Image 1 (tube, rainbow over the protein chains, first blue to last red):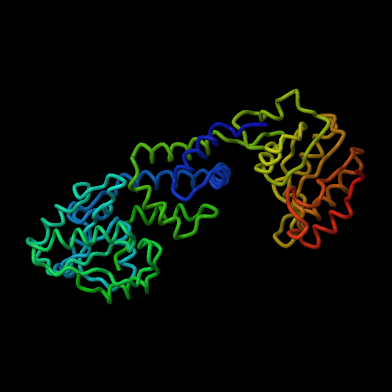
Image 2 (image 1 turned 180 degrees about the vertical axis):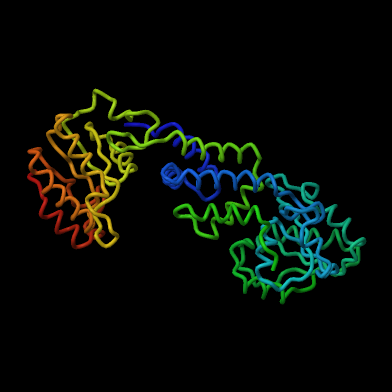
Length: 199
Length: 199
């Protein structure tokens, strides 16, 4: 059996390390790429490098951004009294697409998971606490997933932030149980925002 | 609604031009890429460019290769009297994986499709004819798809190559290996019946 030419095999390997791309789709993509217009391939390669180099994390909220602070933290028209806590930076995009939230965000960077060795100090919780008073936050909306770890993280945060005296709410159970934000459609997300309940 | 940062939007657009990657998976991939280790992103970008630059088409058979001629055309142990005609370069990989064919290949670059404006001059048919005598080909195996266009192309080639006096054969059509009758459509079953072989 003839092997794949080395450059195609290397590209296949690199592509199959991306999420959701199995060995067969990686091979199919690699074979497609080598037959593309060279300009298009350079454009894609350049887009990869540019995206990685120019995108940083907002020092305040942790969002993915080109500018410091990110456009949402820098936008005075956003309601600074409402702070929405999400697990990952991409959850911000899902919430923004729902179009109902006009406050600001805070990315935790994960959720508590003792089994995977993720404790409170591994998340951006201290940074969250440090924002509450200076920014005049009156309500913290916990927009974490509705799975067990999301539940546990929400309850931990509710307890830990209680002394700060801000209102703590949580997305309504409009989210399908056991699912992450990225699978919810925009309507579900906006209903979940509207129906948030006090903890 | 906040837009995606420009470099992520550009990367999403570039990724969604690849086959089998829709807008949502492109966005998910782009968001994953900007959070990767920068070295891994450069490796992927470099693999893309290298693959595109180093892979050419074999001048003889049309396969994707690093060397000229390709390893199969350059391998004297392959049976030069058997020439297998395929539609696309990646079909060679599928056949090589089956491990049963020891001859050489010829990539047509498509199949006849009058509706899409693909005629005989758009395929590498003249190059195929030119190989038959010099290479001492005794049998041309048509390994094209079993759809209408594959059928039409096979019949056209059988007629056009007839004067060359080589044996023309075609891949058998029948039940897929390891499958039951209940999964086969009527056309497949009738072809499997026509092509029945003595035990």
